[in-house]
Length: 263
Image (cartoon, rainbow, N blue to C red; front, top):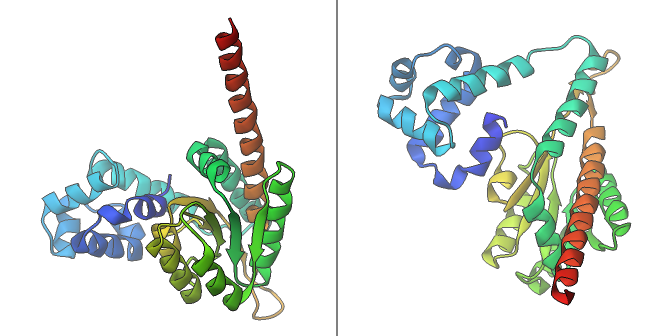
C-alpha cells in the first residue's frame, strides 16, 4: 500500500498538524527519504512526538516504517525512459493491488443495495462506465449509467442510503464530482470511488476506494501527452472476476449450511 493510499484511508483521523506534515512530505519526497525524525520535525515546526503520532495514525509502527514506505514510493516513481516498460509496470501494479485487495465489503455492499449507479464526467469516464456496466451485467447486476450534470442532480434527490454509487474520476478533484459526492454523503449514501492512486479529495470522501496506476508518455510530435488508461479496464475485469469468485464461495457456504440443517 502506498503512502497516498494510507492518507486517503485514514484522512478522517488526521488533524491540521498532520495534514501540514503530509503536505511537506508530499512536496519533498526525495529529501524526506533521508531525514531523521528530528530534522523533519524542525522543518515542519512540530515536535518529534507529533511526527511519530502522524505515522501511527497511518497504521504504521513508527517514523522508520514511514520512511520505508516513502523510499519504496520514490523508487517506483523514478523516471522510466522506456515507454513500453513504463506502461507495463503500470498494468502490473494495478493487477497486483486489486488481486491482493480484500473486496468482501464492496461485494457485500453491491449485493445488498437496492439500486446501483455508476457515474463519471468526460469521454474517458464514459467508456469506463460502459465497460463497468457491461461487465457486471454478466453477473446479473444492473448498474444505471448516469450522464451529465442535470441527471446527476436529479438522482441525488431520489436516491437513498439503500443505494450505492460507483464514481469514476481520473484526478479525483473535479469540482462538480466533489459537490455531487458531498450531497450523497449528506444523505448517508455509500460511495465507491475509482481514481488514480494518489492523494485525492474524492477518495478521502468515499466509503471504499479502488485505484489504478497510469503511465504518462511525453509526446514527440506535438504538445499533447499520451496517458495510458487501459489500467481502468484491467481493474474492472479483475474486480468482476473476484466478485464471481466471492459469489461462488458464498453459494458453497449456503449449500453446506442447508445440508447441515437437513441432517
